[in-house]
Length: 223
Ligand code: CTP
Ligand code: CA
Image 1 (cartoon, rainbow, N blue to C red):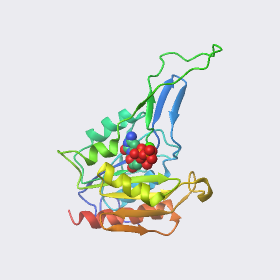
Image 2: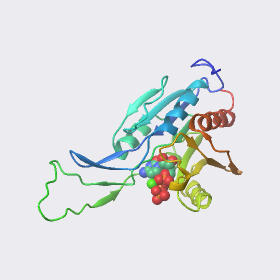
Image 3: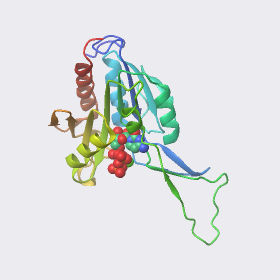
Image 4: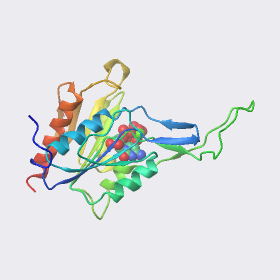
């Protein structure tokens, strides 16, 4: 039985979660995005709130609705997600479950029409929200957790990301098509911390979320 909202080991703790994809407009009717249902992020927001945390849930346009009992901030683009994330600080812990688009394009005010010549899009890199927060001098959350969805060399890529971005933990998972994880209800992750890698058994996204929320509560200790 879940503890009532507002009670539990994360009572008094402020936690930020980013979730879902971002949409980067090409013109008023088209966009660039990563695949992300938002299911793992929503499950995580729910699990953290169930342990009593004060959750700010910054979400792009996801298929899965945000959980109840959290403060929802809806954004569309990566640049908006960065602004909303920074506005939510300070927090005790920040978990970056969003599948942020890596690039945006200049974007056309008007719908781009077929003219006989194919349009060429020029990409600019989006800010790395996780890295920005993890590398802050002021108001760096005590625990910064990233996700790394990879299709090959999962653990090596994930550990390299942890170091490069400066986060404390990385939740690594293999999203290659054969796993069926993308868009599914289950997840199989390896939690990489300062002290090593722990492979968790494949489980429902709600179970993975609960386990991660409990680890976060343990790491923060009593408020
Ligand atoms: N992330 C972020 N802002 C970005 C890109 C990624 O906050 N602009 C976060 C994601 O939410 C995730 C982690 O960084 O927690 C890793 O995202 P990922 O896309 O795997 O990392 P990238 O650095 O973008 O590397 P890649 O080239 O593999 O996409
Ligand atoms: Ca990326």
